[in-house]
Image (tube, rainbow, N blue to C red; front, side):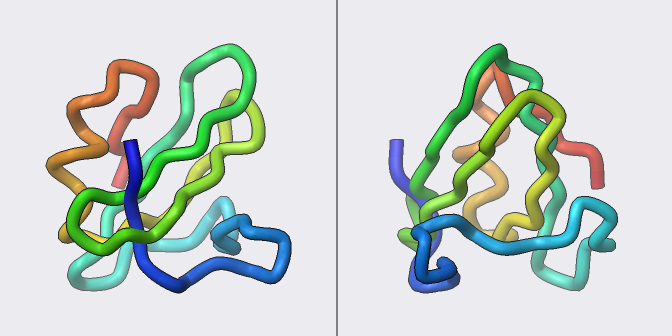
Length: 77
């Protein structure tokens, strides 16, 4: 599954603070899987990289619905 657009660091990982508050048009998702997960937002084309269990990322609000379908991600903000 793909997501997000060009908001990636040089390493290809979306950079966000774990404690970042959602701004208008964004959502915060936490990874509850076992290893790592990369997801590309269906609308924005942004790649979200959840490096380990417990990782929280700020997600473009346009990708919220597609990421919400994944059982290993939970929306927390």
